[in-house]
Length: 338
Image 1 (cartoon, rainbow, N blue to C red):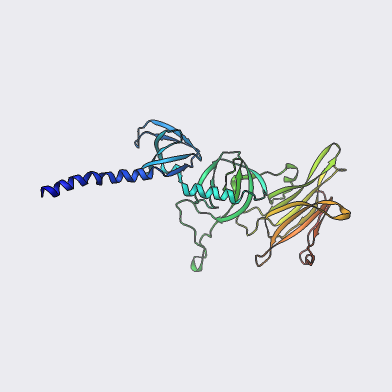
Image 2 (cartoon, rainbow, N blue to C red):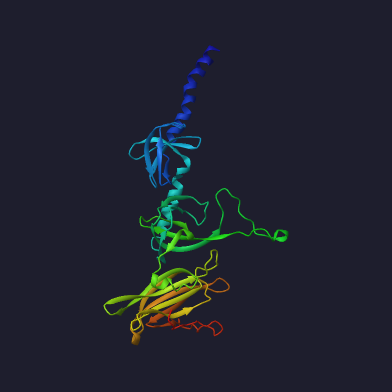
């Protein structure tokens, strides 16, 4: 009996060391700060001392966990406790890095400015993970649009109305933009939190429509000035539509009257981004600005439409074997003052 008791006492320290070993293994875990700024505290208590400060995107080493707090060490060596809700895992950080790499060559469709401080999400959804935060007035490049059902964090999704519950509330959809900020961070931001940059000279002609993007096709000379001419994408002024834009409009500059005029207008499109611009040689006409828009048909198939601008005339450029648009859906052109 004495021998077995002695063996038990010898094994006890080894058992007590197991949690410590576990904490040692956890010390290699890295998390990242998702808040604009957060303080480190010396203890998990109502009264504490500040031991340091961490900023958005900063990497910290995890030393331990207690309830909703995490004990961390910064790259500068500062240690302290931080709320778990201010941190994301290495997996989330890696996913953001992968997204940025995937979209590094994506064509910019527009630029915009944030209306207020907002999160960059990993997916176009309010409940998706977020890491980076944007300040109010941050400049962004717009890459892509998506739409998703509006679901607040912690709230159950709204089920579509069916049968006897036909009067129930239907799901509310909202638009998201895939953006890239000045530091190269890429992710999804609620579209309503971004103001798209649109030249004031043409923004006034939106006619109640939402301007999705504008592109400079070329420039013309008016006296000593170079004036840009624009391709503008517009859509209905609401979220959740099955297309990115449903109207294209080309504004050219009249040097004699010193004003913008609508050189081309086409409605009833199911347009999808991206739009691409280039210049091509059309022999006798010379090198002209060209733009290509992508449109969906009733079956969801996407095809490209090419246009050329020989100021002030815009015309379709048909691919070999392509037939002109059906007379039942003509392109509506206007040469009137905008």
